[in-house]
Length: 152
Image (cartoon, rainbow, N blue to C red):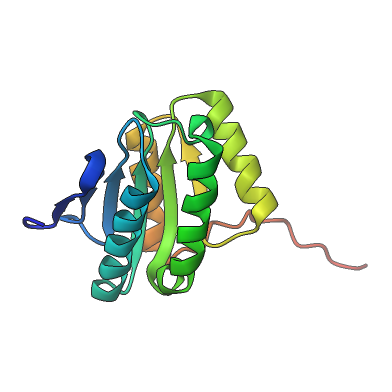
């Protein structure tokens, strides 16, 4: 690692130079050993920073098209690190170009339950703006204001 830039095996890049905003760039393909290294680095960052907004760059990688075995094993790796990640994670913003993939990821997050606030975006700038806003609000999404009703 050089000055907050970690280049993991297989093309992963984790840029923590602007922590608590951490930008993770995925390669076009990823293997299980590469996921292991990535999540070990995530855990190290969580020990170092009490609050992290993850900005995951999926433009070169479509998680929906990853082999089922890699998706299953990466889910197992996440499960092993989940508790440590939850202590520091404020939110996760994902940059996914494909509308279909954004929809599938949103449905998957909805079905598997909330680990922390997570959203998919078509552009890096939108994702970064949301992640920064979540850091400012400490991960509490804005709640719509409803008019109050009074009994007469």
